[in-house]
Image 1 (tube, rainbow, N blue to C red):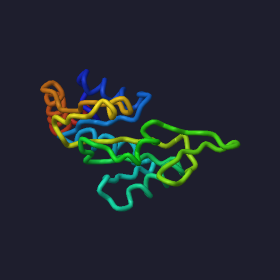
Image 2: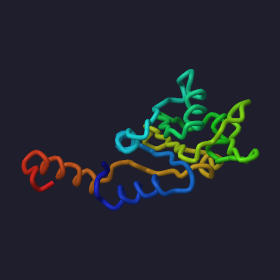
Image 3: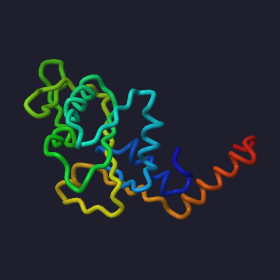
Image 4: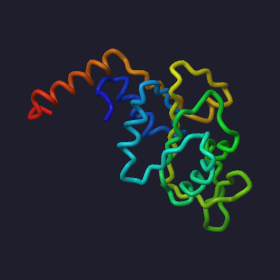
Length: 161
């Protein structure tokens, strides 16, 4: 899980309760590891924008309500993500649909999207920032202390965990 310091707890709340999809600044891959553990039971799919099939994987995940983690996001995002980032879901009869590329795709309300960046100090344009919740997962000194203390306790006194 995440460290128990206030910043990490606040970040966890923003990721799980925010209205927009989270883009996590995550140079130490802490958020990445946490998302993978948290969503493993839900069939998390992990992709990169450089994968040749990333859009197809995204479409299938939207259709079946599978969570997706897009790793290693740079400072710009593919315009094809726009409808998903903006949650441009529309109704057609009793179906919820979203347009991805040239296709209208059934939208399962269980779908979740997470984005992480390894960049430690990225600069995102305002057009990107208004579509996502930007969360800084850079490990604080207090968070690092909590992690190290937890590791020591787990090793030396597992009965206290």
